[in-house]
Length: 112
Length: 112
Image 1: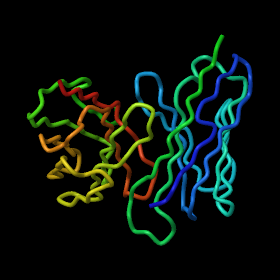
Image 2: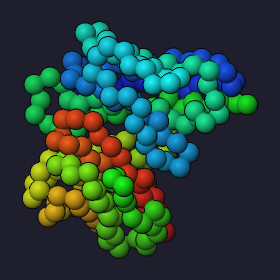
Image 3: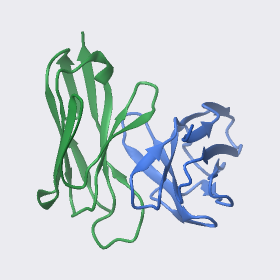
């Protein structure tokens, strides 16, 4: 299956700081999702972004499909941003399987 | 309110017992999925179903079983054959298996 690598594995910030999370994947893909897992375990959809850039408030994401990576930017971080951020991709182009492969996540801790 | 519900939120079972986790969605999605998450890990696919009365094994299907008799329901049974069942179980759905996936709140299973 496709390999998904996220970096850094852990990130500790002070409130107000900016950060960039990276997701590399091993094959061409048709789409990519970013999720935030809150402390209660709920996975919250952040972005569905096959290519290009999307913004939602303080968060934005960029996927460069030809170079097989995606970046998640968090600006002016808040304590409520704490949690684990996952990226996930479907099987490579040409696959008929409908599923996602997940990275191991980035654990973000934001201190007041 | 459209969404995905999972029950129970917490589940305790004794070794050697089978247990069934419920997953229901009212989003009219065709595809449904079960993932397992262990501490500090990403999500791993157990089973998925892209249409009623059909399902496929994921990466870690051994010791689990599923059924898909109704579009809105995809229950997961953790059997006594699963050697290490203590984990967080997440159910997801998507419109047709190739679009954005959405997740339920999860069930934490502990084997005593």
